[in-house]
Image (cartoon, rainbow, N blue to C red):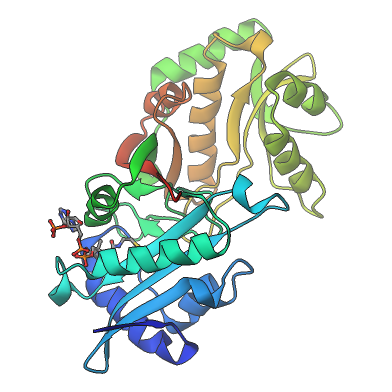
Length: 327
Ligand SMILES: CC(C)(COP(=O)(O)OP(=O)(O)OC[C@H]1O[C@@H](n2cnc3c(N)ncnc32)[C@H](O)[C@@H]1OP(=O)(O)O)[C@@H](O)C(=O)NCCC(=O)NCCS
């Protein structure tokens, strides 16, 4: 049994290993040779020294990858990431996963990393499917699926839990706005708060909203959308023209997933049910726009979870952010 550096001639064997020994036993999506190349080799953060395989009698029986993003900072300021470890099902529980993990940790240490964190900050983030639905996909795994073999492998090797991310899902084909939501919308309308599509000729105040929320990420997401030749429609809450909340933009991804950049209400308009009802309106509009489902994830203690649960989304998988100090 030999641990070797990965090379591109091995792609076919690694893809077969993945599809036979990972996909049926986990939430992860399948690869084709093309999509594997796109995800790993063509990723600007891919470093071939961080990819390895295990060979037994000329057959590839395991694969692993680790990566990092220094983000322009001192190497010790940002973590390394273990992207994945896959072992041929016939060879599980023989210490091969551990062997690969140690190899990848050595690689990260050779790059000056003193910490590993496994979560969505990894620039090589793997697609997964919501169990029980046909191809309801989410583009990146939030962290390590709790109680999966991978979780226990990391636990057995000194990793610790450093936060929980919950993945939420709703089947939009059956979505119907409940009467209590319609009543709440009408109640807020009487006070001048309406949920509508942003129109630059009428509405103002995105910058003030993002200042009040302290979110540069949302500011940038909305700015990028509005800079497009054909911006996607953004759902907002407004009163007398002032923007007091946003969600969306409304966009149907090729998989049928409804896109979501965020959901937020200005502090001065909070606690009126506007976040909940605006998000329900997004579900309705997304369905009308052809989306069949929505997925999202958020920290288990994020108060936005009440909005998602109110709209009928359910937690379908929980993920542990895992970390280990390397020195
Ligand atoms: C996760 C995986 C890589 C583990 O590989 P492995 O070679 O079986 O791991 P090891 O033999 O080194 O296991 C080391 C320890 O991890 C723990 N562990 C591994 N698999 C486990 C499982 N299914 N249940 C409980 N504990 C497990 C055990 O403590 C084990 O030690 P032990 O066998 O002495 O009890 C393998 O199950 C796999 O390929 N799974 C599918 C791929 C996947 O989902 N990968 C993660 C996402 S990329």
